[in-house]
Length: 186
Image (cartoon, rainbow, N blue to C red):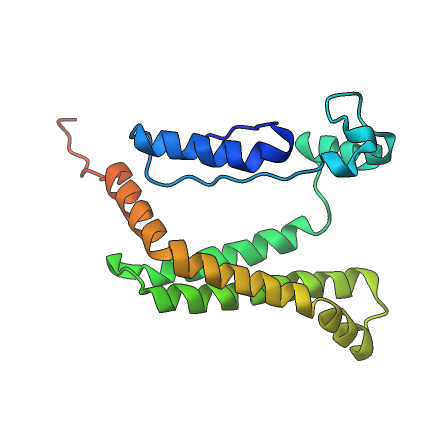
């Protein structure tokens, strides 16, 4: 999946949406993800083009280590959770059936909560004394974020879900692999 990084300061979101609009009009695709984040106001003197801020050095080192193959201890938990969500999505489309919008919203919301709770379970096992009160406290602390994640997932599933399923179906039909029987003639 191709991507592009845009630095237009406060207009980055506007620029990426404009670029996506032009790509759609030019027939380069049907659906694009576009967005941006404004960080200039949080950077020393608003200078994002100068040398890196020393406060971000540890984060940069972690990113560099991960880019070279190092992963955090939470990665297997996230991979397992995303794999389960992918399997649930695959089951929804079993036998070429296209799920309805309400099914996408329901499964998306439940999947968001399940992912968050599974990763919170890792945090519980890795960082606490493993008591019931610690487990309840972790889940309670993340409740607002879990609800926000679920709400956003439901919203995106309701707005974009059926269109994305159609796009994936079209991609699948274009790239379907057909295995031919092996014969002695070749």
